Length: 59
Image (cartoon, rainbow, N blue to C red; front, side, top):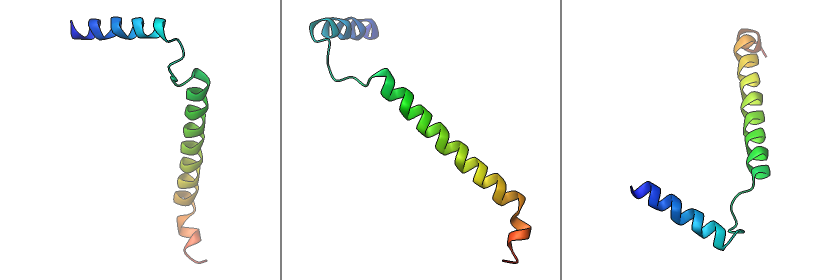
């Protein structure tokens, strides 16, 4: 009951003030792409270090 009331209040607020400063879809897509890229780069570095760990010890 409380959730439906809150949802209705939010919808009424959005109709009254359409530009409330919410995060745009483009911003979310950019953040997801940046985080995904960072995770892929970190994962690749971890895999390379794990694979060549024995060979890197002599350096």
